[in-house]
Length: 180
Length: 186
Image 1 (cartoon, helix red, strand yellow):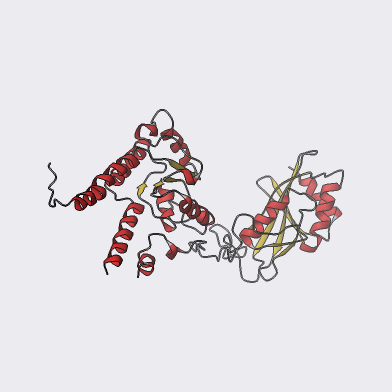
Image 2: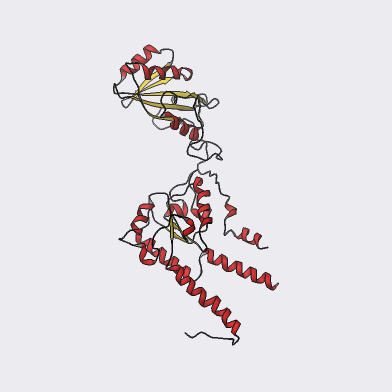
């Protein structure tokens, strides 16, 4: 799989290397050094402990250990039921996290509200923050969580996370403004 | 079980008790609203009673209460009081259990607070206020306890819409909302 070089001009080659190779290398680094912020609200937290513990060992995939400050983390795991009262808190935590950032909705409650259909439960945390990967299950099996993490790592590598796509879009818009 | 509690309560406060009943071994005394504080004070302080342990305080909304197996004469109609405020008490000394019930009409949802007698009722009455909108007169700090202050209405009332949510974060403020993104980059 040779790379077709269509230009011999140095600056074009540098631009190509910067946009492609550097991004791939950065994303490769990002996907193996996820720092999770566990926003644990409910019983799914037990499964999260199981995944983070030695038996299933989330650390094998580089999501080494949870940070309890959103400013030190780039993967928000919303684990459990989110109420309408918690909406401002979860949005603020998401806003405080370091860019680029990703969100996993852990369990059906965080994904859709689950079996709650009433006045106090938010029907999925995607009502207030963008979610990259949803994990179904009440609670999910640890294997599902590992599957979701690998799926997220694929997304990060190919630059398809929500915040990565937004960055790209903003760069394209800025570039079009510069040209126009 | 504690029929003698009901008997002595009726003997002592005949004017304050509407009627009494027993259900599944639990004694229930229906108390007139304006006499509740006097009855509760007597129950707490009288040496033959000594109800020193408050168990719970809650409310029952009888709106459209027509269950199967209950004769239609007992079912809820418009002219009956809508709410029943319910205090469960226990006397550890004498091993008595007693439930006080107060009929509260929808037009005037006020009940004297018992938080001054039993401080453990403080949060319980706040919860009842939060969920049913019952005002406890004389409560030291009657605020919502579970819900946020922006919440309108009382969610456990039977006429509150089942799925009505009152979000605190506006949904169109989503970071990735396409409309918002388009507006910002116009």
